[in-house]
Each structure stands twice: as structure tokens, then as C-alpha cells.
Image (cartoon, rainbow, N blue to C red; front, side, top):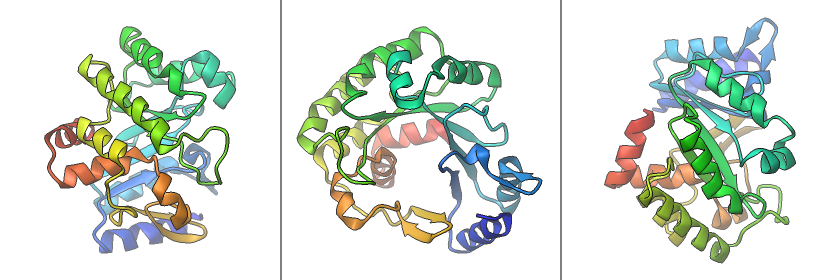
Length: 243
């Protein structure tokens, strides 16, 4: 999208009542329009009055300093990370530790390759004092079709039980108990109409995937928001942590 397209989309979103903005991709740190970068877009977004600006990144190009919260993708310890994202684990780790940003969180996507690494990764985050708020877990959603990474609903349930156990142990899981229980049961509204995606192809509600994918959605941010709306204490507490 050009700068003008992004600014127009933001203004329209403000007029419709949206107050949170998430820049994602692809990799949003790569975005350029002439001399304009993501940093300039964030300045414009805040000038419009949006409450919080979030950035989803792989961390290789640094941590965007102007964002209120930066979500960095790390799907496991070095061996798993290398298989998924290349041999850049220590580079991303260094970017997080040296950024000085006060609010960074990890996004960990669970699939067949990464499910076994949940507890070791959480232990590493805790024991290495990685300066993050915690780890938010999503499940691999078949946006582009069902592949060997996909976990069925039945296969997800014991994994979610393990995440609940991690919360009880005090490990740095950012998902709330309420959000995980709803994710486990599958009983939450889809599509989640408070979330809108804008890109060069137009607007989508909740995500870009076809409707048939909704039944296998693993996008845990939506379950967190639904439980926040229902004023579930654990979801409210978790939301306040990163707002």
C-alpha cells in the first residue's frame, strides 16, 4: 500500500470507531514509500488519536521504537527456529535484548513441528530473563490450505491443557486462562467483527482467509478479545498488562 492509501484507511477506520492499530505483513519493517518508513506511519497514526499502535515483526530488522507494543515471532529454540525461520535465532534474541523497548512480546505459533517445544521455550524465556512481557501462543491456521503442520481440534486440546498447566506453574504465558478454555472448546464467535484487515486487495473481517477456514481458526488474539468483552477476570488482567 502507498502512504496515501494507508493514511486514508486509518482515517476511515478512526471515523468508524476503531482505536487500536496493528501493522503486520509480511514484514512491516520492510515497508517504504519514497522516504517514508513504518516509523513515520506510526507517528501519523498516533497524531490521529489512536490509543495504541502494535507492530508484528520477525525481529531481524530491529524493534520499531515508536510502537506501543512490538510482537516478535519466535516459534521455538534455535534448532526449531532454524527449521522454521532460518539460522537467525541469536540475531533476534540480540535485537530484543538491546532494543531498550519497554513493551515487547513473543508470538509463538503452535503446529506439529513446534508443539513439543512449548515448555522448553517458556523455561528459556524465564531463565534467560528475556526482556519481554511474555509469550502469546497461536495455533497454525490453514490460511493456504491444510498441510502437514496442521493440528486438528482434537490434537489441539491436550496442547491447550499443557498451556494451562504452564500458567499454573507461573511460566510466562500471555494467553489468559479464559481465552485458552474458549480456544479449547471452540465456542467463540467467528468471524470476530471488531477486527478488520486492510491491505492492497481491500478489506476483510477478522482475517483474509475464506469462511471455511474459520472452523479451524487458531488466532488466539480473537479468543482473548471475546473473553475481555465478557469481562472474564483473567482476560481483563492480561489485556491490561499490554495496554
